[in-house]
Structures are given as structure tokens and as C-alpha cells.
Length: 635
Image 1: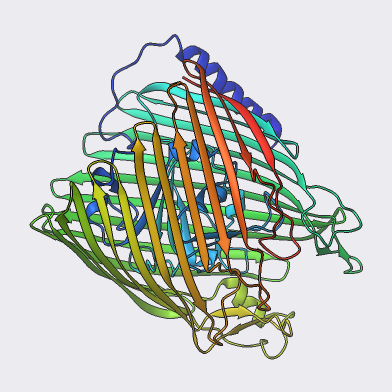
Image 2 (image 1 turned 60 degrees about the vertical axis):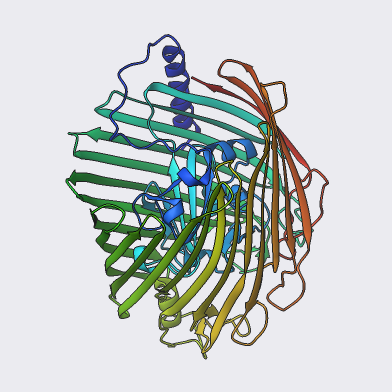
């Protein structure tokens, strides 16, 4: 998408804001309009959607879930969503050389392609990549209202593997007409323009968001000693939501999304001589949409949906096209529930999936069907349990059954509730279309050539306790243990293709989480993760820090218009593929915002305040101290 389109979108948003300042508020939206998530005063009132695909109070959930609100996203100010996500427990990120470069996000030590990411219900995975998964480096934080992170095996409800599920919600339509526009700039020639406009009248509601981010970046790799050029990145994203309350019982929804990203990187090979070069470029396009209908009658609720996501990538070396890929992912299904109060609820559904990939060497596709049922029960408002099973039928690998059981037990303690919880779940990952095609293609040779890969299996459990106080204090401790069997990996010794281990890879550890409103104007948040990982050979799994910690402090001083924030992130004891130690590091970020006038806000942040010199991946540079500032107008 060119700059003309994004400029037009932002102009429309700005023009609408001028009109909105003079427009009176119109009739309140129907309660059936898309829900606007607002952070409650404490965890006792918080509602979670991701755990069982329907709304459930956090206090009743036995699974491990963390939530990031719009307020937290805006205050931190990061342009890339992965920088926001890495502040959460058990979330580790490896970024090679700055914005736009292929980024890995691991939850509890599992690879990013074992984690499902949904954005307004759309599976944004790229099926053309070697392992099907989301290109999280192209997800901007602008326009995001809420993120729920579900940790551990979730094969039951989603068919996803051991890493978990990340459920992202964009800004929901609001009452009347409103929105915001923002512009910021900073180091490395970075600038971002963003805006959103939304409204509703009780029958129809909508929201349109657009953002344009670009940066000159820095030299991505230390091995680039010839060009020594900056490796930049451009991203233009447009996202829209439309809803129609046909009646009190029926709502129709439509979501559409377009992302265009271009990033420069180091280390690729020329087309004519296959010699190494650091003049490399990757163009990324993804168009996706989803339609759904929700119908409620009595104790039954029904949802039918269809989504389609198409991804294209085009790579260049020394200015010459080197190769192209494209992938398509279609998902449709039915989600139903029956409720007889807290004592009994059934959730059931069908998922149909069709994926395809095409590049210069491979062109292949396959289908998968999934059927699931979960029982949810509550007893005396103290004990809550779930149990369910899922049956998947894959074109290439036949049938597979996944399970999940969870429980939560509550009792009053010191002005709040103490919850004991536990979860056990299983999952699987079928080899990707690329992995299968590569081993059967012309580039594979022994021992990988012709090797028939089977699915990976996963299982895991966690046990924990949490205390939710009426005062807003929240404390949680969780022990987790999860295993991947028959892990698929690329042969890095002879580069022959994809092989499969015969043993187990494990991750086990402890998560400590805390939120503490010290004063009305001062709040403290923090989390610590200890993760002990092993491959089937007994060595540590690469790029998994043994220790991760985050500490955040937010202060609203007596000057009511001012908000200050401080965040510290620590990573310790990670290893490279060859067993060499990776850099330990501690990063300090600060942010501030000041309300100049009603609706007009000045904001800024400084990343890596202490100018920590470190590498997340060997030979790849990271940002030094960088300051950014901007203006935001809300109406």
C-alpha cells in the first residue's frame, strides 16, 4: 500500500475529528455492540475470553493467562507489539537487527510457530514460511486495545501447540463518534503517523485505524564490514471493523486488514553467482478478513465464522529479485455454548482449515478438520472445573485427539481471594507444508532426502496459586512443566533438510507475578520467570534465557496532567545453538506523558537509557539509547 493511501486515511480521520468536536453525543449503543474492554480496579472483576473462547471471570479460570490493556500499551509507547509482549511472564523475544527483521517470540521456551496469534479472530499465520506461524515483526502496537496471553498447551480449544495462544483485540467501536490522531519521531530517522475513527448508533458501529511507521534503522549485523549501511523498515497498516445489530439476539460482524512491510537486512546471496551480500530486502504483504454472525436464544449461543488470510513475500539481493513466496489460510467454523449458570456450561464447535503455499520450488496445500467439546462446572462459587477433548483429522497425518482439564479452588483470605489452580493439556503440530515439500524436493539430500516426517506431540501441566485482593494487590506463583516429543528441526550439520528427534525436549520452571498499587498515584508491577530447558540430548535449548524479569513503576504526581513510567527488563543465562553463552543484559526504559489541554497530549520515551551494548542473537546489533517524542489528539 503506497503513502497516498495512508495519507488519505489519516486525512479522513483528522477531518472527522474536527467534525466530532462540534457534534453532540448520539443515542447510546446497544449492549450487543462489540464490547469495549476496560481494565477493572482489581482481578476479582476481570473477564477473560481466550481460555475457552467465551467470556469467563478470571477468578474461575484454572489456566495461566496474562492481560495487557490499552492503557499499558499506550504508556509504554513501543512501536512494535513484540516489545510490549516481552514485558509479560515467560515471554522471550529474539530480534536479529532491529525493526522488521524476522523475530522469534517464545512462551515458556517454545518456538513462536508453536504459538497461535489471533487478531480480532483472524489467524494471521504465514503459511509460506518454513514453519507456519505469525510474522510478529510486522505487528505494530498502534490501534491495539487488549492482549490476552494464554500459556501452556491449548490443543483442546484451538488446535495450537505447546507455546499457547495470544489473542489480540483492536480498538472497539465507541458510543457516538470519536477517535484519535498521533504523530511521533525519534532516533534512527524513525517516525510514525497513526489515527483511528469509530462510532455507532445502537444498530451499526464501526472503527477504522491506520498507521504508517518508518525508520532508517541501524546496521543490522556486525559482520557487515563493507556496506556498513543502515537497514531500515517501513510498515503501513490499515484495519477496520464493522458491526450490525440486526436484532437483540443477532449480531453480524466484519473485520478487514491490510499490512505492507519492507525491511532491509544483511546476509543473503546474489542470484547470478550465489555470492554473499549485505544488500538485502524483503517485501511483505498480508491481506486478511473475517465475517461472523452471533445468535443468542435462551441458554444457547451460536457463532458461525469465516476468515481468509493471504500473504506474499518478495526477496531481493543486490537489487535483483531472488525469490517469491505466497501462502493462503482459510478458516471457518461454528462455536456454540449452552449455559445453565455457573454450575454447568458446555462449549462445543467445529473448526475447518485449508492452507496452501507456493514459491519457486513448491506448490502444495492441505485441509484439516477439528471437533471439540468442553464441560465447565462450578460448585458453591468456590470450585470451578473444566474438562474437554478435541478430535482433529489432518489430510496428511490422519487423526489426533487432544485433551485439557483444569481446576480452580477459591477461599477468602485477608480481604481478598486465594485461588489454587492447576491445568493439564496436550497438543500436536503437523509438519508444515514447507518441511514436507523440502525433504521431497531437489534441495534435500541424505539423510533428510525422502525422510517422512510425523507430527510433534506436546503435553504440559502447571500448578499455581494466586491472591486477588479487594485493594488491587495481585500476587501469583506458578510451576510449569511441558514436553515436546519427536521435535522437527533443520539439519544444521550437513544442511540436508528437515530431521526429527527421537526423544523429548522439555521446559520446566517457575513464574512469579505481582501487581501492587502502592498509592493512589503510584503502582508497581513485576514478574520473574525461571525456565530450565533440555533437548533430547540433554543440552539447554538455544535462545531460551534461564532467567527473565520485568519491573515496572508508574507514577502520576500531584501535577494531575503528568504520568511517568519506568521499566526494567533482565535476561540471563541463554545459550547459542553451539552451546556458547549469549549476552546477559539489563535494559532501562522510561516514558512520560503530559496533558497539554483537553484531548491534546505530549508524550515521549527513552529506550535503553543506560546504552547497554548487547546481542540477542550473535553478530546481530541491537538499539542503543534512543529517544522518541510525539503528540496525540483524542476526540
